[in-house]
Amino acid sequence: MLHRAIPILLIAMLLLPLATASAQTSEIKSRELVVYTRDIAEIQEVRTVKLQRGYNSIRLYSIAPDILEGSVSIEAIDGDVSTHSIGFTAVDFDMDDYWAAQIGQWVEIDLEDGDEVEGILRMVQDDDLYLLNPKEEDELFVIERSEIDESELDNLAPQLSTEPSLNWVYETDSRGEMDIRITYLTEGLYWDGEHKVVLENERAALIATAVVVNETGMNLDYDGITFVGGHIHLAGDRRRVDRMNPEPGAMMGGTDSRFGDVRLWTANSGELLADHNTRITLLADNAASVVRTYVYDATIYNDRISAHVEFTLADALPYGDVRVYEIHDGTSLFIGEDRVDDTPAGSQIDLNVGQIFDLSAERTRMSEGRAEGGNTEQSYQVVIGNSGDADVTVRVLERMFGDWSIPSASVDNAAIEVIKVDARTAAFDVLVPAGMTVNLTYEIIYER
Image 1 (cartoon, helix red, strand yellow):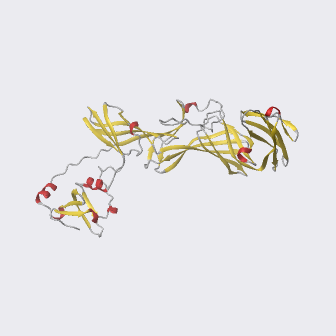
Image 2 (cartoon, helix red, strand yellow):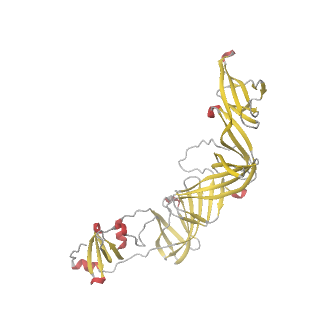
């Protein structure tokens, strides 16, 4: 440890009483969270603070670090208080701040060489600390910061800002304790849907879950949490093309959760741990009849046929992944998953759960040429095999462009209906008996 001679005048200055600011604290009485599927959330808190009469300020801690500053509002619940300004301070802590905050405090310092010194820190100047030890006849020590084992420092001064804070400048004619409401938006807190469907006896039982992602770096106790479903628009958003829109449908269901043009789900009190994902159930015990369909789309799957399960719920279902299970010999077996968009009550849910093991298909272009009037003709054959023990109907999709027509189609020389799905898609519903192979043939005419 390094001892230095200190001028008498400097010692006298160091012995003068130090002015210290009292740390302002606030009690969080309640916290409500409103969480969106985008990276944004609203935090609403009621806090008890101690205010002084006149023009003053108070610093409020336990604030999310990624706050949107322009979104902050503070108001007195009962009382006449005017807000002059609200400032946000992010975490900006270093060792200079640490030592400056310790001035006037009794400190115990471990040195790199294993020694320990203690005393009242009177001043910090450049890389030197000035300590006064009353136990040793007011001896003043000067310690170089390079001598200190800073890894052993764990006693932070209460006035040191080691976390984000709001500085509220207010004016009031009252004094004493008062409840205030703080509301702000923050990033780092959002939710995704993660749902489960269990199939049994041609019925689907669905459990809808919200997975809350907490990247705020702080634990969040809450008295209530609200999940907002629907894609809210934020400044700077571009027009979004959504290709997962559900089949339109309508049903009077879940009307108590509607708010404006979005849908709300709520849950009771709990805690969101920092840097954790928390699962909260939104809907449970929702059952519906299931229709199984099989689809062959050569432009996507080439030679495989995909299985779909379709059902309609009486409640709205938020965007998210849906894992599908089926009861087999009394055990729940995972069979696939798909993703759904925000789905209103009464709209059909169509889940692609994977490719069918016992069904196969192959599409072949048999011919192509010019027809009368310069039109183009193409003929196709789709061979579908069913190695299973049950008859199935496979929907075959043909995707086209331009001005087209399909005069006719047949399965093993028996005519079947050509279904026009939209301007670029035709469909054929083909019955494939168990243990059999069938041949679908059709001709496409593209007009000039």
